Image (cartoon, rainbow, N blue to C red; front, side, top):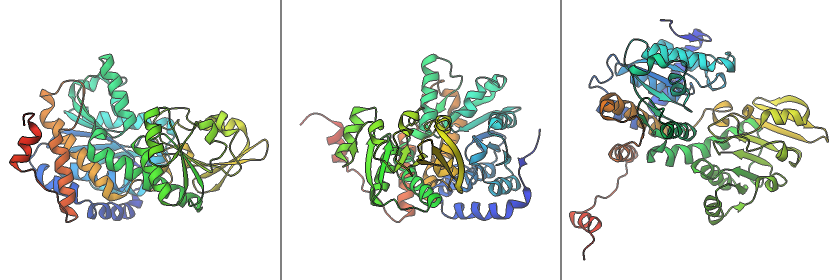
Length: 420
């Protein structure tokens, strides 16, 4: 079996420093490691991971490797790879197939290598991002299906794909919707996406957010976080939605709600967060003002029609690192941040460590749950058991020196009954 393929092993020292910093600020994952992951469950088990290669992801894979798993990891694409972290991981006993110099078209090849390594000659658990590993296991690597105990999914868009597979009756192993755990979406999707998206845009452009008209397209948990943080920075926020209830919620939260074609005429910063395709297209680009900034915070790379943006432009150039300027025939300049891919990873370091500490504690527990309970689980999408979610939250509160009350027996009886 081929060993790690990274861009430059000499970059490892910087990667080790990043991973150590993440480890130092991950009290929940460290507690979960000490409490649950030292019982031998992962000895001899393969763990295939498809996640952006950065320090927080790296530390999760290190924890699993130290628990005895044979861990292999690849990124959903080269723009999500930090080469120093990849090199450091390879030195810490994790098999890595990732380089920022790979062609985007090679992403599936790297994920297939992860599947071959993790499930080629042993039983395996998958930790997936946007359904990449599971999709390939059901198509080009079907010979490995019988050895895959199950998978957990990181993203809203990935869970949606698995639910579609379940409806069609083609899902061949159980999947845990890690994204749907409360300690994931309430914090990672909302606060993590909100802070890291605005951070990426501000770092890349070096422009103010305060006073600008920011248009948030999509008002799910990610969109709510983005709107909240943009508003906190002093922006005037408008929201675009296809769901009238979410639109009404945005209105009740104090934001203007209007169709995207109308918002295109007034916005200065546009941020997509829908998990769908064709959210910003030529119909919107032709209405945008000179200097507009476009960024995608959603889990798929087709929310902004980059090909359509290229078609309406007479020229394009890089004006800052991670910022491309497209000039239209009438002289307007539209600025695309992070290639139109998920901006907090392509143009910054992703979510804060403390947020991903919660998410990766959930992922570690999902992997542990699948490794132990897969035989009794149906081939469908499962929610993480509530008691696991509650334990992660309790552990985090303990780590920050806080806590909550417990119901008295009288209160429990009152809430559980219906008689006077």
